[in-house]
Image 1 (cartoon, rainbow, N blue to C red):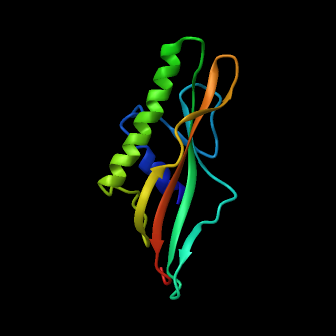
Image 2 (spheres, rainbow, N blue to C red):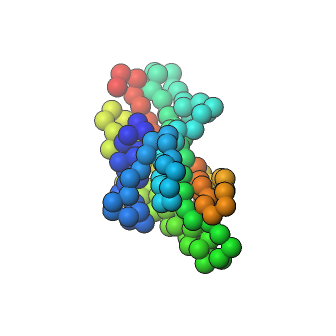
Length: 140
């Protein structure tokens, strides 16, 4: 699942075409990105009497970006995450989802705004939490 989400996120037009997106690992340099599975949630949203399930996959999209006293830099970082969230919303509306065999996508969405997760002297890790919801039939 996480590899399909990673491939899907790489299509975001607000990312540089040469951007590498890691999985569960954020490199120690600026303009590094990572998709991370969230822990501690129940992946089953609902199960019907036949064993068909509405499932969710929660993940975060993290970015290490420059962070400093220059307001415009920090505004640009916020705009990047606003654009990312809007891209997910547009794709959700247009039913453009990750292509994953054996499931029926329902939605993909940001469940938080982008926010500063941690900082050091001149860099910050920004994070946005997201959720992919899908339907899985019992025998698939």
